[in-house]
Image (cartoon, rainbow, N blue to C red; front, side, top):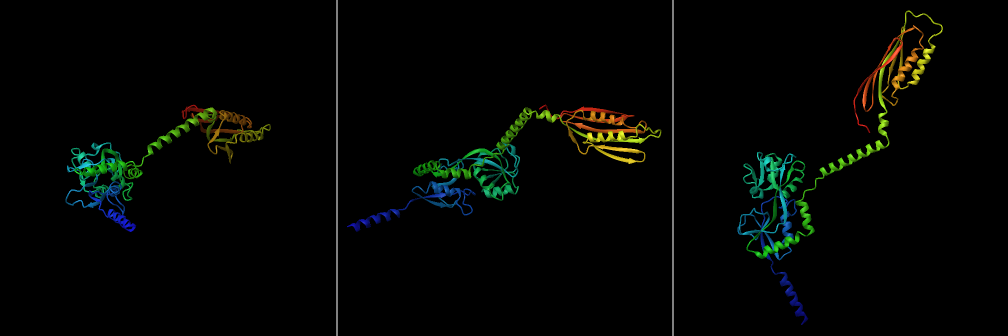
Length: 401
């Protein structure tokens, strides 16, 4: 008796498994990736049909776009693009938008900015209906492949297309960094399925499946992949870096003021000097035993040792001695009376010269400047007296710290 029961159960199981599922015919529109299959991978159309229809009691049968008869379901489509009243638009799967793509990276505010240019749109898309009356001349393309490559080849200036197509094509190696989205939100559109209106059970089944699917992680993954552009943080980084730089400058100013570094810096100035001191033997000189010139040589050596920042180069020729005086580099000094002291020391040195032995010619010029002023100077002699003349032409470079 048990054998009969086992046979009966096996019969029921096999009968149930072989019971045919309801088949729905699905017509896919002639669109490009990412809706259609690409590179051996399923396109968004079939991915969503498998996610939404396959878990139900229905079996999918894809029919050709030119097949006769009314299919139960139209593949991914935009709302308000099908004029056939036999169909009802499902619950929206994706809330998307139209973008403007160009081969030049220059932002466009609205469609009025480009009405005089060559514009391309996709046939039977929401753009064709939305922009009716706004554009007088435009080129219609049957699919996105031809549209994007026309833009790439400069046959058109701008392409108005739904966001998911733009994201897919602009990530292709050939078009990457060569085409640019210049308006990210021209107008809104909804993406979903068109369902045969008389099949209320199918409509309810699909809307329920869509609502459930939109709560899943798979849905968020598809949304990020096809409909959300990466966030451009360029402006944010500029603001952050600007704030950091401003904070650093503020901190530096406060630090300088606290440590009185500003006053110390302003206490220094840069000196540049060059000139000649010439001693020529006087024809009227008579020997003076009380002063043979050794005191002058000692005084000159002391002058050179005292002012080591200066280079003294001697040139002996004939009856004259030339002292070339220079600064080796532009030197920084803190002694504001440096030039006055040097002039006084030079005067004291000249006092040690034997009377009437030499005729003196002194001409030393230069400039010195700090963060606030720039001055030029001249050191010349009148007889054995040396004088310092300063031309003060003050210019402000930095504020008080």
